[in-house]
Length: 431
Image (cartoon, rainbow, N blue to C red):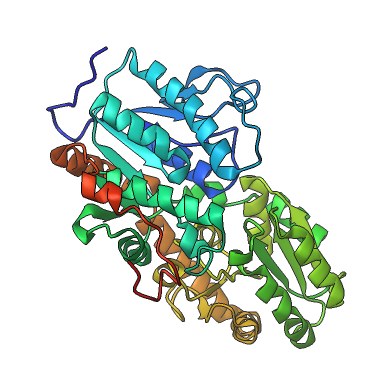
């Protein structure tokens, strides 16, 4: 087997992309991101192979939308893992993805490896060293960031170490916002000139729901007053607990108001119990997982969409909601603060502040003409700045830069210094 790096124009590249999520296996935004990016790269004339985990009933190899998809032949317990450890199970899945990637490389040459997040770090570094290719790593979020700068247990410290390893092994690190560029530099010591900021994208047309679907969603979830929408994985950092705390004020100011929460996650029961304690049973609907089509209809049916995140590297859901045309109230944190300009494309509020959240939402509900003007500007901004064709071009430029740098390597000193510091990693100085 011979794997070579192209000496031709960066306008056409051969990309080996690694991700634990790809349709039909979608858990969150990662799978949707990799799917849309790979298709946009293929449309631009690049050769894209996506290697991903096993999908029950799925083919081991197929071509879809111009993308070659290669799947692992099995998943745990196909590889024995007698533990519930996230790290151990991730390494077992990585082992099988590595095998699938080597299978893909038997009859194809590649110019670059593009790994998505720590979940495929072991596969990515193994392939980089085995195939002699430059590695580009996208860090979609960090473990420390998800815990507001802390690493609360052994699992978190282990994930942080893998993120450090992947970032240092990559020729280029891709992040989705300027905030994440700062965070990755702070946490992993990656120099700024090695980090490329490439935002997430949105296929705007897919977030314009048909009127009959919008009407049906409104009839299902709305009451006699306005409707608020939230979509996201139900974890602490998404801030649903603060949205629920703001609800009594909003219900008093806007009689008949209803909130629909779309998504699942480990905090679902906790949020349901909180709503029950606060007497919000009739005002809040927990809708569970929604498809993109259902989410588009939910956003379009809502009078305001709220993104109350405590930690948000980018804020893709804000772009999706904006593409649907709904007015936005978002927490001024992380990448969200870079997407939404207060008073121009939406309203913002300090994260973790239910009173300010209620004030921002109420301002939109109380001035419908202004809310619609903000929504129209946000929709225009999404179409012009965040199309996947634009994102694909910026990604291709990053691959070309990585190719010029060649494969990065951890030197001996780096390996010795791979130590997890203590304290709040985003606010204190630790070595």
